Figure (spheres, one colour):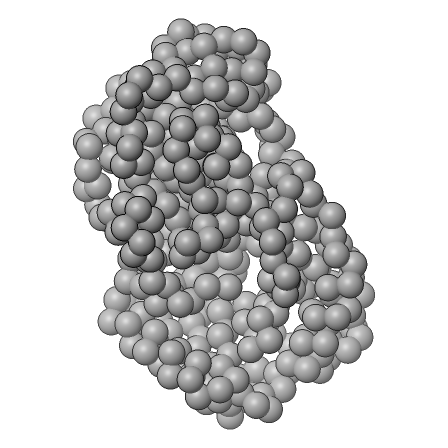
Length: 404
């Protein structure tokens, strides 16, 4: 992912909006704000890693799906699908803006028992009621459509080839930044090291370079480091980095068609990745890790991933790993969904945190929603209130069973 010209000193002493974190969430907020005709304020985006080498955005698998169990998550994803499909239109029909490559190979949730099969059936009915193209497939239908699967022990699958699969999120991210900057948003290579607060309002941010700038609103888009920013404000935010592993490999055998992003009952997932394949999983032991811990567990592929792959797709007996990496989820341990909107104790501290792996596909809807909230004081297109911080305070989780 390309960086931006490195500027470390702010041009102004005061900004209407300071966004902490310039990866895909922060840049989506910056772009939606800067393109909103009703917002005429100044925007500062502070990013400590302008080449984005370690952010969650750089380690994404760039997938999108509508196979969620909550109507709001489905609608968030449907907006993302529309945004990607009509990217040039959303970007003002600028002839320099390219279309975004999409491969609609779909998702395939596999149920290994009747209880999860019933969950998939219930979710499919909801998804279909909202216009998603999800269908329930019998093992026989799965085998007929995708002969490479071993369907032994499978009760059914939930599958959708419409607006689900892989998309080029890097291009979307690049153009969020380029257009936001063209519209006047200022990006800094710097770090927020302090935040001034007067009772229930934030007043300023202090940068690692020594400057203190006044602010109207602070947006926390700091990814796995979100709790560090909350600590500076004096509030608690339980978002932490959790390590996730990705393995890209070749297969000696041609499978004949793309592999949907397949979620196996074992918890391992795999999909096509161009001429290769990409697999990953959640570790069995999944603690919070250090912000700079990207060390790969060399045993997890041999012990967990590969056995599950070979069981589900026997052709994967003969594969060769091309590359592998570890990235961080910004993990919301409360209910694994984004926390978005103002913090209840500090009205001008706006959260966009805890995506738990869904950030890239949810970034258009969250950027739009935060822009509306800052500009109008309310959501005007898609009401994101149920994803707000109040649910944490009230102990009422946002229920979403379709978590990978």
